[in-house]
Length: 113
Image (cartoon, helix red, strand yellow):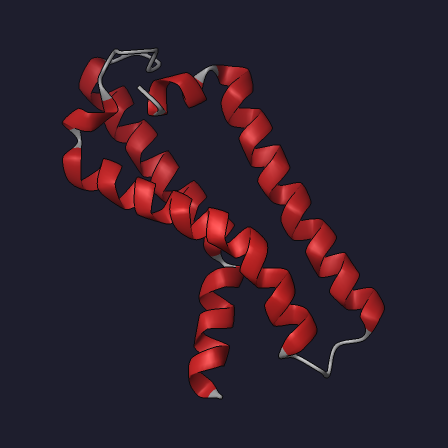
């Protein structure tokens, strides 16, 4: 049961982990170029370790969108149904806001380069 609780905590914090790695990669790119990163300038692949960690955290984020609601409904029986729905709503809203913010700045094109 402790292993499941550990997985639940990792999955619950996946959006925050992904956001932290993205911000670290963004700041590193900003410091290397001296301006806001744009498509192909600088190539995110140039920061190999940071880019690899960001991609891993992005896959963790994608998996967490499926696994987090499953964990809430199947494992944690102590939460009320309203709180479960609220947690699902907040997590999906946070991820959508995060993706919208990246795309509005054109950083999605930069990171996918």
